Length: 179
Image (cartoon, rainbow, N blue to C red; front, top):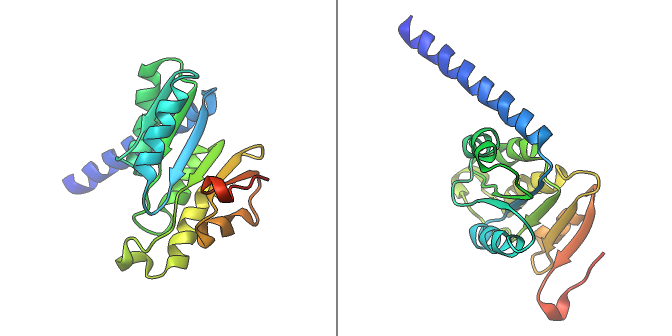
């Protein structure tokens, strides 16, 4: 009985935090940027945060890249931070559906995908499975959103097809193209 009561209390607390996070996200006027990829997420997110700091107030959340951290960032940290112009969040995949859940909560205006490699082999098994998970961030873009995709990675540039938003593929300067 006591264990069930503790679990109910935890579930209720989690649902409350989810509600507060969704409410905070809906009220925020910040531009939300999601960064994902098999590697380079933290570096790209950190650099992007530093660049945007010259344009306004930025909250950058890298390294800790789970749904729990996203919820805490939205309902707790952003409230304490005051007015924030940009939120940069690193989205990591630990299992199927993890990025999709984060992307639906984040509702990014900009999605950045660095590269696809075989990470978490025990879960994903193939590069295509990893790409499918990472694609969820691009799929959750707002209608007027922007996808920044690595042109040097065929699995990443493949995410451009079917995206609902503006696309800005990125590559080395010699191969850079824009749409």
